[in-house]
Image (cartoon, rainbow over all chains, first blue to last red; front, side):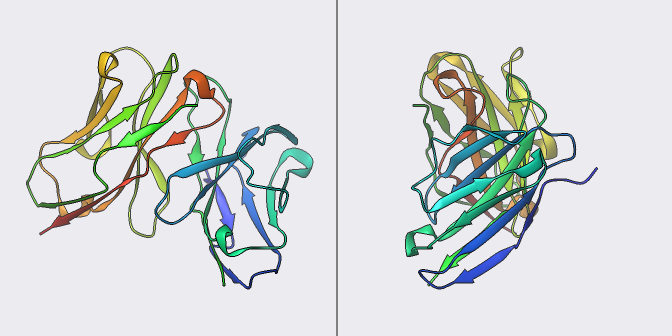
Length: 115
Length: 115
């Protein structure tokens, strides 16, 4: 069974540019999560989808970040326009359920560098 | 909000030394507890998890963790580390006041094992 995949693995962009990150969850997993780790800090929750619906986007930093999950399959996270403080590793995770005893499976992450 | 504290940010051990990484979480009701590991260049992987039952949990690669409810702790242990255990270790929690939809991570502990 394929795990969670993310694309690209690395992205280097200039301040003010736009970047779109993609996540493909494990097949059949309705729940998809985005997390971010800024260098030297904790991995922090950004948002949670159930199928195509946003259940919780309380962790999104600001309105420069837009996440979508059209059709309830893969998800994209767009940063527009990117700022220096957006640099970090963006992780995606998926789970079968979002409840007690269901673990989240993480992707390899996308390392974003904004210069 | 749920929070997780990891006591050591960087640990250096010689092979065959014993390991104990501290983790405390803030009280917020019934929680699930996890230790994740990220080996250099690899995904975040689940090392072990506690949902309920026996508070001494055994994971992969000889790791174990003990849930002590009265201390809100979930320390990770291994009796004898190997060079291949060099990685970053994350304590994490979901449930409680944070809900099961998001995982709250500690800042991570980088373990370096010297041959």
